Length: 88
Image 1 (tube, rainbow, N blue to C red):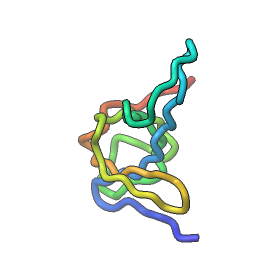
Image 2 (cartoon, rainbow, N blue to C red):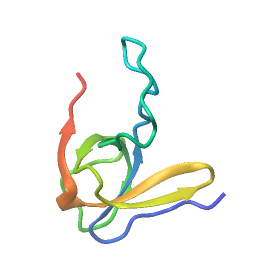
Image 3 (cartoon, rainbow, N blue to C red):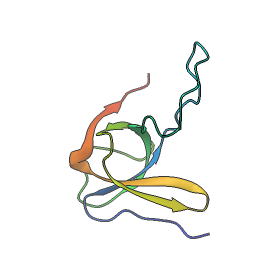
């Protein structure tokens, strides 16, 4: 199995899957909203604000999508990251 390594200022993210229904049971179409949260898989040498396995919030629509081994990833630039979610 081949692995992917982000280079330079790139961050490789596994976007969070969107729920298909709301808590009240309303169906949400897959194309209606793009995720803006995801898990950092790895990052390039020029990135300093995130760590592997961080959950980040990023600008909607940002990044370059990539499908690899059945997973949908996203390459983001560090400037597209809005924040890191701290789970305590």
